[in-house]
Every structure is written in structure tokens, then in C-alpha cells.
Image 1 (cartoon, helix red, strand yellow):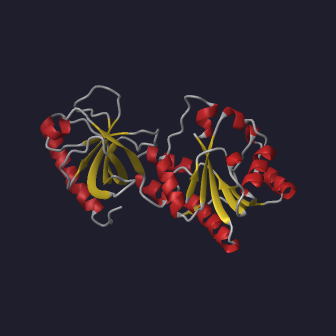
Image 2 (image 1 turned 135 degrees about the vertical axis):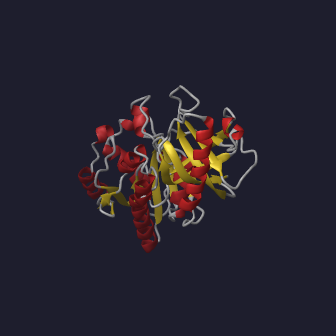
Length: 316
């Protein structure tokens, strides 16, 4: 897959294109349904399949300081889109100037630079100034400019409409199992291992402290059975793990959240390495213990419970 990280104005028209536009945050089941349809439609005509992501996310540009927690890093989105068989990914730099573009001007660029023939969008999709480019408006523009617009209905899985916002709601309550059903994979957090207080090692459970480079959607405070993947963008290796998300109430009296994971079959220096956590199941809530001994006893039980929970699943 070719990744184009500039304004598509500089693209040279090649093959006719089947295109979809969106955030593709999480690359959930609904996203993959659309990507598969775009790739299949393009292959049927020997055309090019393409995806446009406006980056950074428009709300962060239009409302500085307002961040919607992300379900996936940009690198994860790129990898998933490539795996779906898409030929071209355009990461269109989103600016205030671009936000003021009319739907007609927006689509004229795509018609000219991509030789756009088919645009696939969701029923709640909108683009252009003040989100005035609704599916009805885009279909009218398509008739004028010479491309078709296909509107994909909401994707339903096990009776639930699949959406990024619904997945975030499940994560906010710690229900990683329901989130996984809608994602079609386990929820993940990807970051870099940084130095912590070293308290876990002193307790006999050396943990890797995860720093998130992007504002990701973190599951609710609690203890989780997870898999930890080292070097997730390269030659990855996965390990069963127990992950704690919370404020360490037994030791700390602060509200600073930490993400700490104990790899069950690994004992080496992880500092500065890239690490991805795959959340399989919540084991329990975060608790404050009366003594260090009580905490250690519970941590041992958490490890046993995690091994039982993870046993039926293959490594990610």
C-alpha cells in the first residue's frame, strides 16, 4: 500500500479510484466491512482502492485542547488498512483552511486528482464547511461531477450497532469483553516503557510502566488479564501478562493514573521499548489494601487468575 502524507492536490491521476473517507479509529468490524467493500469493488474493475484520513483529527484542530480518546494509534490504522488490501492511503493534513472548503470544492479536488469514480460513505458521514456535505449533498455532487456515491448503512454485530463511540463507552466501564466483540479484536494500548518508582520489583512483581504517546482510550481502573506484545510494529513477540490501571491507592495519595503490566514469562530490561497491551478480560476492580502482605497475596492470586483466563486463547 502506498501512503501519501500530503494534500492530494499534488497527486497525479492514475487509475480510476474507489474511495472512502473517515477517521477509521480502531478499525472495528464496521470499518473493515467498508474497507472490504471498497477493495472488492476496485478489484472488480481493475481500479485503484483508496482511503482518506484527515489528520490530525478535525475536532482537535477546530477545538484546540479538546481530544477524543483514540482507539488506535495512527500506525495501527495504517497497518490495518494495508492488511485489508487497500492500494492507497492519503493522510490529508487537516487545517482550519481545509475546514472552510465547500463540499463541492472538496469533491472537485478528489474527482480531478484521484479520477474518482465511486465514493463509499456511512449514513452519518459529512464533510466540508460546517459538515454540510451530507450523503444526499454528495450524491447530487456525484451526478454533477461524474462519480457514484454509495451509502453504507450502520453495521450491526450481535444486535449492537458498531461504532467507535460505543466501544469507548464499554472501555470507560472496564468492559473490554464487549469492546472486543465490536472491534473484532482485543482492545489495545500502545506506548513506550518508562521508568517508574520500582515498587513492583521490590514486591516481587517487576512491572513495565507504559507511557502513551497518543491520547488513547484507556479502560477503567482495574486489574486485567492481557497479552503484552514487544516490538509490535516489527518482529513482534507476545507474552501473557497482568495489567493494572489506576492510581496505586495502597501506596499513593494522588490522582495520577498509571498503566503497569507484569509479564508472566519474561524477565529482562524493557525500558524505552515499544509495547502493546491486548486487553482480554477484567479480573477485578482496583482496591486499597490494609498491608503490603495483603497486596502481595492478591497479586499472586491475580497471576493465577490471569493464567486461567488466558489459557483458552492463542497469542495475538
